[in-house]
Image 1: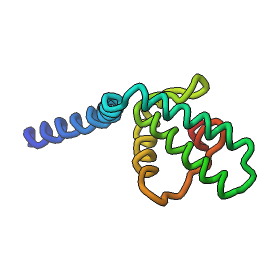
Image 2: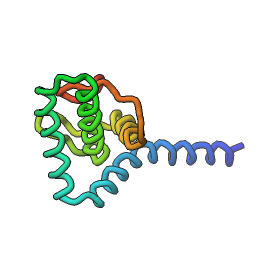
Image 3: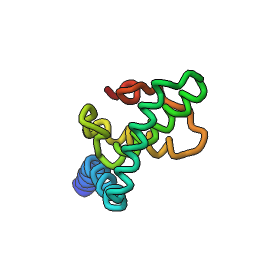
Amino acid sequence: MKKKLRTIFWLLSVLIIGFFLVPMLLHLGYRAITTADEKEQKKKAYFGLAQSEIYITEKEELKKSQNEREEIYYWFHSRGWAIDEGDREPRFAESWRELFRYWMKTEPNQAPHEFDATGPAGLN
């Protein structure tokens, strides 16, 4: 019985520690394979899309632009980076959710999340 409790304790400990460490390790891994040029290019694309959305009148075209911008938003947050000064780096509770959203947004034909000029709804 004592051995079983010890095994359960260690298993739970490993799971809890892994739950907290994995997002950080994923952020570091993504950062390691991301060049400064790629980061700057994504930032320019994000702000270019945000600026162009002011003048878009077609609903479908606006939705497409917002989806592209949202993908870039999650690209930054999957690396643990803020997109600009008004944004903040994801907190721990948000890290898993944003990693999953990033992975889901990289799949083709995903349903878009609501998105406005400040970021995805519910994250601000």
